[in-house]
Image (cartoon, rainbow, N blue to C red; front, side, top):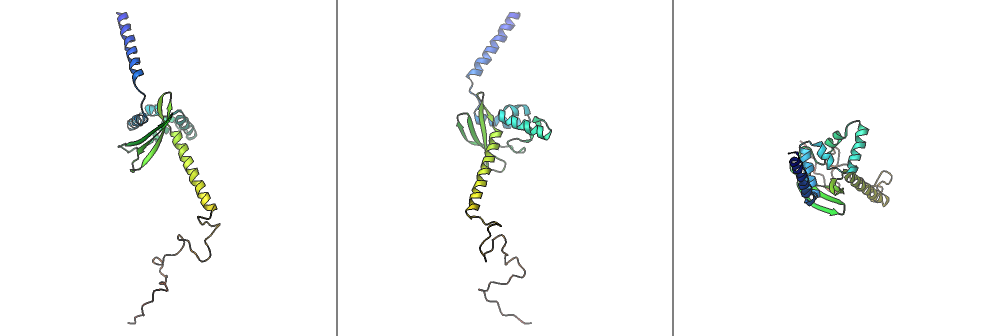
Length: 193
């Protein structure tokens, strides 16, 4: 009897392994769908399994700095708004071991989510998303500095030429109680009662 039970158990294991080998790994979109299901059901363990190693390390460092658990950080810093119920995906792009997918946010805009393939499985790369945001901000700052260097944007150090008023500081005649009408428009004659 034990031999039969052992044979059935071994056969079941081989059948599961055979089925597992023929199944393709989840796509980046499927990974995001699994993440949204885990997020909605507050399955922190599954959410962590779907995050890249670099993302988990980033969460561990933040948890240590804030004196909280990694689970609390993962629960607080989800990819989506906690009240978001509908998730639409578009523009899945895979380039080697990196991928991006656009996900509609709660405001009707589209956010790009970065993924990385680790050990054959697609993982959400929160670290990559953070790095991309920092890179974009640095590019915007460089562009702003170039514009300032070229005199494109007036600052306190480089005011407008004499006689010109900045739109932000020039008075609006309609808002000023003491503003006089434009000299080009003749004043009506005063009426005496």
